Length: 255
Image (cartoon, rainbow, N blue to C red):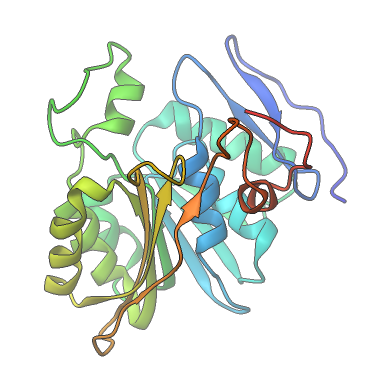
């Protein structure tokens, strides 16, 4: 287990236990805290031994840290445009002693390929803003609004840059909302990221899905597998066994 380090927290910040390998993460509820979508994407994505992975719009670095904990990849990079979030991510890397495995870069998703170079990663992950423009409730908090709405980048930006960043047969992993699924699949194919695997996430077994997990492979042949749905809650509001397993929690944990 990783030994713990002291860390200087800024006003409003907290240090949360990630329930894996003793890792912790710095978060600020006043800005944005990671949610279930990030945890599910970290379980859905795979980074093989020797591979380099990039997380676009990494926020406070949750994806690179969780992916490092769960996989045997060579390196994990997070790209984040908001400097305050990037700073929290860098300090989380330090507190977990991951400086040799994880790096955080401040930059714009729209310029990612120019920043890192074409075909420079085996894996790209992204938990992008779900809402188009002013769709949905506008949050007065700018950091949260940027994280949830396509203010600083669009789905098209994400797909275009991901295609440029991935080497041939490189893998793309994304979590998004099902209401944009047709647009997402069409965009992936347009940018030569062939949709290969999809899993829908349902809050309850009798409710429509509210998340979709997708894997695409650059310049692959067409054929997509639709995995069994993931159900988050039992009828009594407790987490399902599969969800608990993905979170690394025990049966007694409840929502």
